[in-house]
Image (cartoon, rainbow, N blue to C red; front, top):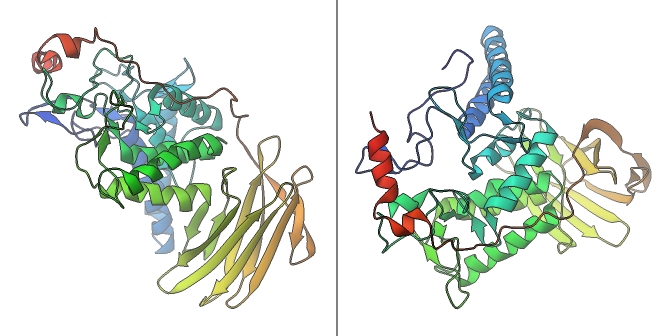
Length: 398
């Protein structure tokens, strides 16, 4: 750790781990990357909670205190006031790195028990990652406006790993990007990306799976260009996770026997029915039916060993978050009707139900946010100078 509680690491110690012949990093991100700090913060909060459960109060207090230091340091050193976004990493000399990469999105989606950044920064991060890096079919690892951008993978005047984390689209990164978009009120736009990923799973490459990579640009005939591993488990797992945790808004807390349910369904999903596992053998079945001016949610308790607390969250027209909670027992059916978004009221099994403000809110989503459009710059140094980036990285090495 550094003197501010942030976790340090070597240049290739993040998921962007490609090296030149096992030596210099192609995409150096030492010595404090934004995603590593988000993981570190979340680990401290989870560890403190587990320490509480087993009665280790001193450890819990120490880890909570360190997590607060990490949060303060993170917001001090990683927050870029220009655009209200986050730096990708902090260099060993404490200077911020200004390259635009998707890793800042992890500061939104990794922390599970407490926010690492406020909603204004979350909104800025989503706007930048979507407009700079997100194509309708995948998330680029580096902005196409960057000097080090590499648009192709193989058969170029550079080693293929030069492009690996410097321009190619990593399909698993759609998970955190879609998650951040949904959280900040862009679920309808996010679902356009999800629909494209669905087509990739069903009709591109290996049916039923998703590739590791796609090229940022389409082929001359308009076809998507797959690359890397043609069947990548984490690409598919993030696709599935987005439906449960983001569009359906399910968060399970087994320690408290609680499920937080905050659906943010896109306009095209008007009827949904799914099973939510709870522990080893317990299940809750949930159905959502959306009409023009109301939404009905039905819960069925299936083989529940004991009652489960359900906390329901919804957004007001002013983008404030309201919530209510109730208990579901095994064999019980509960119908929740949401019919007044202005008064934040509804019905629970036919009885009046009022949602209460949580104090949380999100900024109003931008109506003009759009995905990036690929434009090939024929003057890219990577396309003109053989091994352009490799020469730079080797020269930088001590």
